[in-house]
Length: 402
Ligand SMILES: Cc1ncc(COP(=O)(O)O)c(C=O)c1O
Image (cartoon, helix red, strand yellow):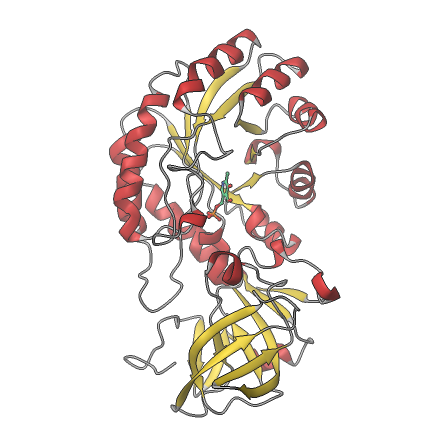
């Protein structure tokens, strides 16, 4: 927590300390907490808009592109209606319930892309009845069964290039790689996939792949190799109009991470697909919402056990599972900078599970006391949307700041 160049690594114009008080999205977090109980999520509409605008700016070096926000990252209805009403981008969906939710937040069929695995027949019928929703099929079974419910529908095929990408060298965040995964159609079944589509009068116009989550600048060379591998698939599709690269763009999680250079990222894409007359689609989730959200909890237990100083808070991994599942931290920060003196602490939640640890052996100001609020940054993506009521401690408010 000791500031470097007077700024901590995560501070930015709309998140940081002013006169020792934490501000988020132009508002004092102390004032925000005065309006609601904790646990509470706050999301910044302005940060979401800025993140999407940055994507548009970078992708504008391509002839044609589409952005679909992966709503699985955060489906809070005010967030979705904000994105829709401000015409920021479309929506990437992965279940019938998400589809209806997107409709209810105002998204038109033509603004939606749908990519799911292990789809039921009812789900396929729904997609057959909504031909303007872009659909990516990720298995032979999906293509075969979809053909029973419609014909002449345009489809995408989700492919698996057997290469993965993700945050640093975190294997658990890769959707594709040495280990065989459920995601997408491999090379050896691709010809059969095209044949099945043709037999069932389905028109393949999209190649889709999503090979992992959280990549930053150091992984752009891997992205380059993955795109290289996907030409094998795209070259075989005669009616190809779209290439959908999925999501996976990461945000910094600690002081060692740099922000993803979007111009460099778009340049990699352009070098592969820039001159082919194709529309490039992307469906980021985390990049759009993760750093747009904070989770405010309250310290209720400060206690030393053996050599470890524990700080217990009123919310656990049921509210934000990524820190314990994937080791992607939601870093705790204090509301008020009272001291520069730091000491290592272990911040834990209120769930009866051994994995319920927010941060282990982490330097925090040594004046944290019971009753203090603690703010967890990077809590806008895959936190509330993956939340559970484990131990019946799932009560939390969500608030969009405009
Ligand atoms: C098919 C697909 N597209 C997009 C995403 C969004 O990924 P991210 O939030 O890492 O950008 C996911 C995440 O699981 C996904 O499975």
